[in-house]
Amino acid sequence: MKLPDLKEMDDSEAIQWYKKEIANLGRQLAFNTPYYRSLIIWKEQLDKRVEGKKQTSRPEQLSLF
Image: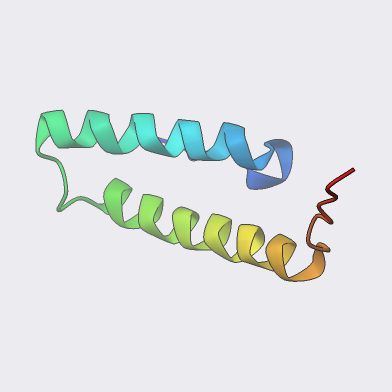
């Protein structure tokens, strides 16, 4: 099974897709497979991308007015 290209997905789409895949694997008890290991590497790439965006974005300025 082929993993989607992270460059073609925004962060929320990627997270939702990952959650569905992990749930499917859990139902099948398929955690010791090459696909699962590939999925973990894919998730690590997503984590790095999200973390990089956090570090480069400015915090939102809150105002009382």
